[in-house]
Image (cartoon, rainbow over all chains, first blue to last red; front, side, top):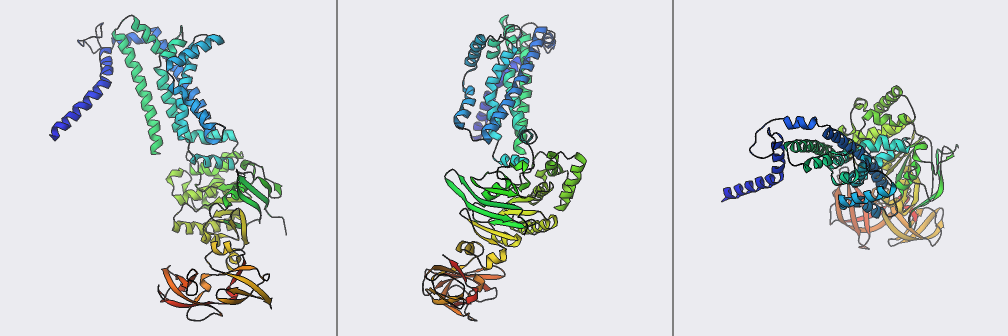
Length: 260
Length: 354
């Protein structure tokens, strides 16, 4: 009886993980296909499709664009998120709870709505569709996240540390740069990597706000319109690999924070 | 007499509607060790924050070395604070922590390191220069915080319950060290505590605070032996308090009417005033050698052995609501249930206006 329950539990676990990871495994497996169609039987392994991806100028430039947008928008997010978290944590502001709610509100709004809103706004303001516009969109969606992560880690126990620095003669900007930022570094890095992850494979906003130069997810979508082939699998696997690296970096910085 | 190092004049402070300091004036002399003693909510920490510049008082002025510092921010006034939680910079080494204040003053790296080493040697932590704060014990962190505050040679060092987080043994040991360090550097220390033993052991000048006011101040010996108010008689050590009414004065003695009959003692008081008589536990005599003031008999309700003495609680036979707090020598055979005759000497009774 007991053995049967254990077996059922194992089967259930395998089914759940299979449900989650099988699509990714299939994607990666057929990216190594030697022939031209990503359908069984498996004919690989071969790296010819990865070679095809890396020699495709459109894909590689989209990859560079994606990285640029991700890094720069995430930098903007953590800077703004840190400053607003510090402001809310250290100063008594009128309507503080309401303002904090407003700053995290974009988390609950769909990317489509935010993308459309920005599209209308940029049209009205005469800002052309571009990578910069997409980057601004990514700041809008990721700033609340960075704010929430950094704000949650900014406890009262750091107030006295900042006070001590001021007491020893540090002007406010030195307190921020030499004390608060280093002490908050784990939360800041965690916010940065999570924001990178979300920006890296964000599609809707990039699709709406870019035109000629675009990001990798949009380029993959373009590629998919001409049908499935192992090249799309290869580029998808590359995107996945980068995401994994970013998520691991995020987990590591948060974990280090907890054990410290 | 020269001007005091710190002169606090008529300072009041309110947090919203709540008055936490009510017209407090205090002078601090150069090289002195001042203790602000009081229960939580007495305003002692607020007064320290006002001295450190973290709080600007609602009313009144603070002068340090003769200059008006009332609204000067902490960075610009000649005070440094040792925080209760030490507030060391966790990402910097011990040496960098201690050197931080000098770095802010623009002192070059080599001089900084040398001075930081010197300050660490002063607190007995010369070997910890390259360690990180989390590698140190609580007592060691406390010393680093002390070195960090002392290295920039403040006019006044402020300590906010510095021994509060340490265990009892370490607290007594750090207490002795604090006093020794203060004597060595000669800086004026202002130290906030609610521990009266700490206050008596450390203070040159003891300031007893209650409910936003200074109840009593002076050398701890004087504050203990001759407290000025009922609060300071009960907070700085224990006392048995006996209510009474002052009668006529004759030859420098007052006759006070109490529930134990008239008691004549050397003191001054207006005729007819309601007064309180405070008697320290060590001055109450249980049986044996009689004092010159008889306080009737009492039934011992509790005896607590404290090592070097026994703390005795006894209920008066005349008034079961009245309790004596006495101290008996450790070998005394007194135990709960005994009936004892209580007396004391008139000269040991402290007369307090009620």
